Length: 502
Image (cartoon, rainbow, N blue to C red; front, side, top):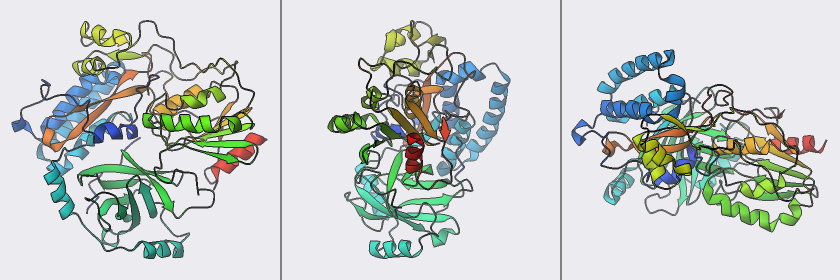
């Protein structure tokens, strides 16, 4: 399968609804409950089911709904540049093949360099359609024992993406795709609990980019196609939004046991000798809050007896800002460091899609009713907002005495909200690399575009962290660490623990 048409991709509100692109997986794969309705007046008739109709709908919804448009773009020189880009893309969309439409649309959202602004394929198939795609899927003869032997034989010469990967319900072997040429790889099912996915089925095609990321064609559980982007974090997490797989083999000694063996995104807790507790949080997905609650409760004595706590959030692409609440009491200090980032009030724009979103449930300070009374206007999310997430606690624990948070470029959205919260504590030190930079504009809503059968969804952030953006914004650079871990370090966890103990 040809990957040459896939372009490179560039690139949480303080409330519990801070969602990053990866954390939207459940929402998207469940049919996008927040993706508008058939009565949406912005939707053209089925006869207009063209790529140009999708592009025009995308541009119109972006201008109405995207709060950054109203703060940074409308009425400026950047709006004029946007119009030129849109005109060029409209000419391409008018002649684009159906399979290429996603790339035309993605070029428009990528122009803004905001990870919370994206388009995503989510076609809705009938069971009969999914069964036909499964029957037509490519199958290759493959032997897992032979694969393990080959990987072991070529140790030290493997591409980082090669190996055996897993997620709940299946295991995948990724190997070079000789038919695709240099830098091409294919992921083949080794085991699956789904009748539609049997050993030998090709699950994913990847092509390595110069920057170490991968252009990816991924097939969802119903065998429908997703053109996405692959990134490796920790060397053990392979994210292909909205899916993340964990590496099962080969693993370095320091990587073994760092991920949950069934679900690589579940939090884990390990003890490191008598001095340290290691907590791994690969995702802020709200479904893991209860897991983290249980881990903290089970190991509360160890957490309060050891001087060092290391929280590893590398590769955490977001979810719900409250997921890591069980850890906050162990970070709290009476004195706090001053915050970084923009300092104005959180702001939203009154649009029909945004009103529908807030009217369905989470409706802080009656924002849906206030927006309905002032369509098209920018307004504060809260009329009396206390900025920042508190890091206070009734009891300040003596232990742990020092806390390290290990971060990288894969930390985004709600993961970044946790960084901003944690760094207020005087006992916390941030280690690693800058975060992604996906925090200035937050809380993603997802709406459908014109051509419903094509199934392309548009996600955009509704809330600006401040009405003063881009002043003091963090999106361009990400949140910086206090201490940079050298990129050549083979074991960042061990390096961080040694530094923390000094």
